[in-house]
Amino acid sequence: MLTNIVIQKALPREKDYKLFDSAGLYLFVSKTGHKSFRFKYRFGGKEKRQTFGTYPQMSLAEARDRRDDARKLLRDNQDPGLERKRQKLVADMSNDRSFEAFARQWHKQQSPRWVPVHAADVIGSLERDAFSHIGGFDVTNISEQMIVATLEKVQKRGAIETAHRSWRHCALPSTSVSNRTRTVTRFPSFMTAARSRPSRSIAKRTSQQPTCCFCTGSRSAIAIKSCS
Image 1 (cartoon, rainbow, N blue to C red):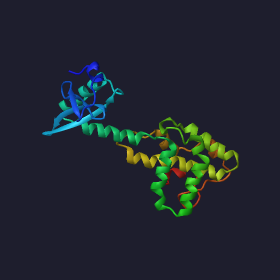
Image 2: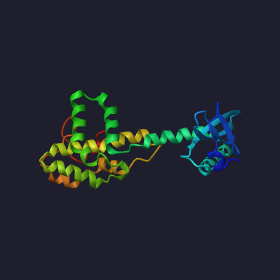
Image 3: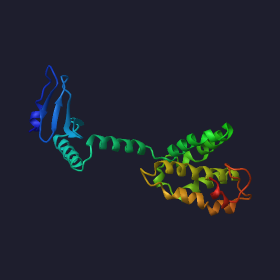
Image 4: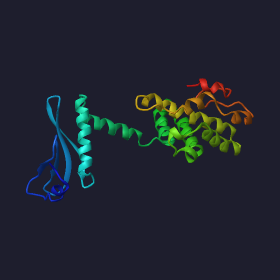
């Protein structure tokens, strides 16, 4: 069994070596003196290994907890190594959930369908009118009121048509991404609401009917929701 004293006194040798704890957990000591907690197990008839972390960043108690969690997965017929990779993949996908990140990804996916001038106009509109206000917010924390407030700032400078195009841009990015990530997370409902119910204040203050920037011809604010 490992103890903190044994780990602290484990000095480098001419070759790498192992100090075993129990139930597959051991300390791996490299010839350079680097120490890491590792777990040896069998899955699918094959011997496998998983590295938990380095010492002293990870304590012996934490390593034992990780081992116990891994053994629970084994009892449920799951490979701890694959489960760790799955968790990392999900975490990597969820690292940047900002509106700007989703919008730029949506724009990248949609651009091949558009002429270059239109693609540039869409991203330019988002960069100018949306990202500076709500771009850094996690999409799950953005309310419909925040989108309305952003559009009203655009409208106050007299850019009525731009406000409606910006509303359209803000409504679509997350809808597109949601289809791709539905198995990972439920996308925030405000985007769906924004598509089907544009701001009344925006609509009332508009002196002309908005033009849907993805379609030909003018449409009413309500009709925009049918454009996909």
